[in-house]
Image (cartoon, rainbow, N blue to C red; front, side, top):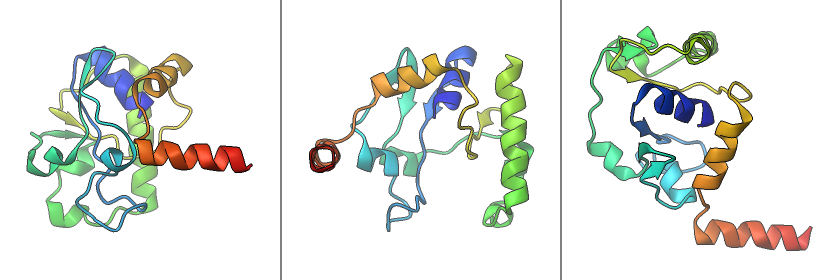
Length: 144
């Protein structure tokens, strides 16, 4: 999330946090971000969409990485090699300091440890767990 936010900030893009299909939820079309975190409209000047309105949103092509330009039926299964290839392509783009000609950049690969610590701090300052999630965190903290 921090790497994608930093890219959006640097390039003047909107950040869409789309965690539908999460392994942490049974509802495939529910955005997991909005289940676990309070709504956020903006992160340090970057406009954010992170709720279920994403189900009505259509993202314009072309897409980066290029694999996402394939017909939807071809995108139903992504082998690990493809995910790793996308991660490397995204890493190169994000580290280059350049933008992409693509209208939509899809960051659907783990880029952990591939952004600066200040970007991570900004994310942690800007997002807050929902009260019920925070209550569970606090209870586990007290217990252990």
